[in-house]
Image (cartoon, rainbow, N blue to C red; front, side, top):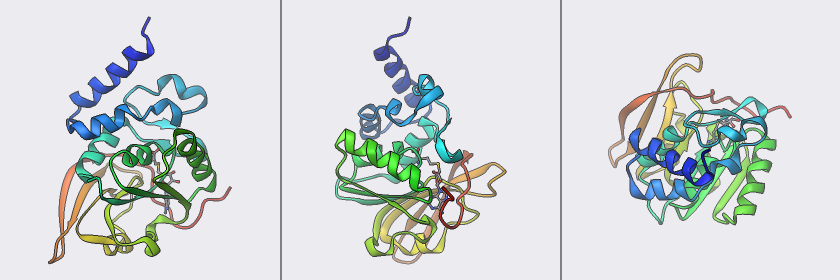
Length: 213
Ligand code: SAH
């Protein structure tokens, strides 16, 4: 029989073997129990490296992809980070251990409410969650040091590019929602934007407007 401690060890081992090597990211992921963000039938698979269904027809991302995206974002302790696509809240919780402040938005009110309840239980007081169409960003809190988008758009949304601080980094999947997408890293320089393609991924689509409850 596998104990919970063994399962967690295997979880971290799987992350490392899939390229999540940054010690601070691994530590933040070790501190963030994925089981808290998965409910119902799928709870027993919380420590497996696979995406799982959550409510509102959405998914909690695959842990190794969460790790690789967080690593590519190079979050620093003073950073103000925006996440578009709160979902279960798992990614935001990991970011909260690495950044000064995390703003996370989702178009589904119910997901935001459930994620906020977990943040409260875990005492993650540096996360602000909001129900909004995140493709417009959060202008009143801009600029951001880092932006992570966890739903796929065809192209990087203009308002998000504009809300990135010079020197800032954005990581997001781009491409058609029903095809394989590319995870890209955008760095804002004084002259413009530099794009780097990281790997193939598959995310739910970035959808305009608020979700129907
Ligand atoms: N980061 C999440 C996984 C997100 S799944 C986690 O750690 O669990 C993608 C999420 O993006 C979904 O919850 C979906 O509702 C949300 N989403 C899609 N389009 C959006 C938009 N325009 N604005 C905000 N959220 C959006």
